[in-house]
Image 1 (cartoon, rainbow, N blue to C red):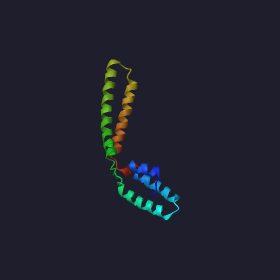
Image 2 (image 1 turned 60 degrees about the horizontal axis):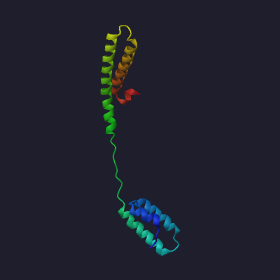
Image 3 (image 1 turned 180 degrees about the horizontal axis):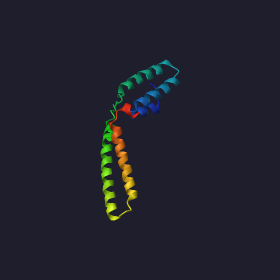
Image 4 (image 1 turned 135 degrees about the vertical axis):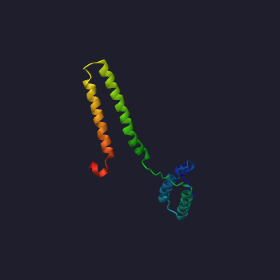
Length: 125
């Protein structure tokens, strides 16, 4: 039996992959066959303890959800902007041109995005 503190501590912590790589370093330092065989057998036992990695399949549903929510959010912002412009224009006669310009720009942005969303990918190129 071969003793090395590092791989033994890694095994106790459940870090079997790291322990396996550390045992390889110890194996390289062995000159005799008996300790080398023990390390090889011990590494084989350790590989049985390794749990397979969890594979997660990303279907990009969160991206799709965000893309469909964005036009709705923009429309609600557009309605809020329209309401603010009308309130501002009621209170200040003839001085709401800056807010009207902002509203017009946001409205143009909404129209452009709606048009672009309705196009197929080949039409956008």
